[in-house]
View 1 (tube, helix red, strand yellow):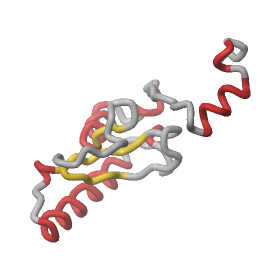
View 2 (cartoon, one colour; view 1 turned 60 degrees about the vertical axis):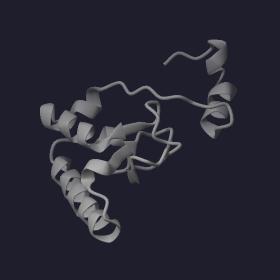
View 3 (cartoon, one colour; view 1 turned 180 degrees about the vertical axis):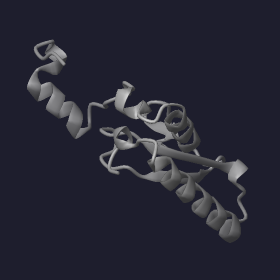
View 4 (tube, one colour; view 1 turned 90 degrees about the vertical axis):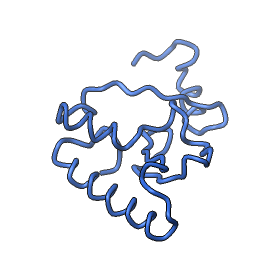
Length: 117
């Protein structure tokens, strides 16, 4: 899976397995229980490949904002509720002026209202 929108119900097993293995490894190695972790994924295009972050709740990660991150357990719950949740869901995100994607939008005339989606 390369992006969040590609995840469907059969992938829940993979996500749960990933969560369990890594939270156990983090607990064993660093003594941080799952209840003290932020576990989240990013949605493309803010980040260009699917990946999962496990960070301490004490760490203020720059990519943890609501405009960039989706809690892994919320993703799992959403897929369990509706197997194709992310195929149907419109996901919003912020594009910052210094990012390449912003420049691509600008070059296409998107911000001038010349492009329709």
